[in-house]
Length: 498
Ligand SMILES: [Zn+2]
Image 1 (cartoon, helix red, strand yellow):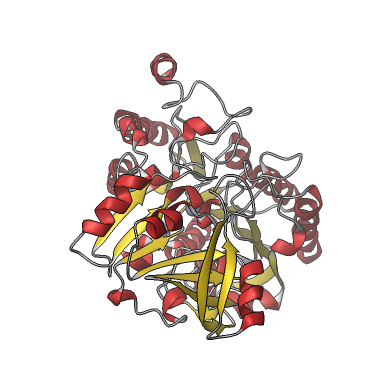
Image 2: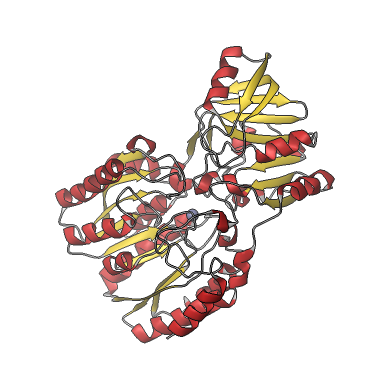
């Protein structure tokens, strides 16, 4: 029986966030602990485990570490996890294949390309095929491409296909091991930087390129196509859009498809200019909407992109507008503690939100009623954009339901993205009865909320994930790049087209 080692380190690093990500921010599973937590989950790792078992392979679990998107990973955290992963692999060698679950946009102190280095070290430790699953928000590098036999990125944003991509990665490994497929890559970066809003796969520019890629996949010579939206909130050279085409020993075909796909992306580049609706207009529209609930997407405070989830800009606007039947969830462990101390039924004065950094508005001083307190734990219903972080069980580390006039403010002990409706339902919120729900998310919330939303308004709020990229100072990003350097990048792209 063939033995396949599995594991990985997954983190989406917002390098603009002022607070670094330490080792204890990661959930780390080792050996059988990986199988126990991730088997049967709708995550990449769940798909990998299932796919390998279906192939009749022995699964050799190493280490899997994941954390919510946040600031630069400390050198200590990164090196500890990397060394442990590679060390475990060496101790289990020889194996017949390695299947990793990575992100692609992990940045550590002193290392801009964590996945490139991890893949290189894994490659050096074994003499067998190495395949990895990536988030399509990864910043793909030549180093990553060179070190891997195959890279399989999510096709969907919201990421509802993570399990399927895990299965696809195992199928690719299977073709290499059993059918003798020879992975042959064509890879290219475009001078195109997408804000988080425009990395949605049901809108341009990614929608058109995915449509073409899907048609190309019907060719049996095509092993895999990864379309990376990139991650604009990571100041690394390769943060923009990239495409990787992998064929079975057919370089001309890979190059031809690559040109077709990158041309489509470039032709649709103006879609990158969408930054959502200004706050005042968004709130006005929400209040006058006749379709409920209205979902206000707080783009700048997108928890899934590394923001703190305590931004107050929309809450303040809703209070000033005297909104009724509105719900906002903020992470604020201090206010949670205050509510717990005071107890259910009491009235307290709080200074809520905007405490982690200076990017997300000012704290709001208000009087609230403590309506309810819970331990903040809930189970997701299955498909969830964040299944690779949580698996199934989500822990908000406590939650208080506070009321200020017509607005319910949920206060969690830790930032938790809106990947599943159970997040609010578990706190006694009747979602369908609300008029306005603020979600700290840009695209990911759609996986859960699109089905019940009367209206969705994407709000151009300030923050670490703001859609307007001109507010970020890039030092390492490869320039020129559209839309930051509009004219230059067009010239550059045309002159470098092969
Ligand atoms: Zn992503």
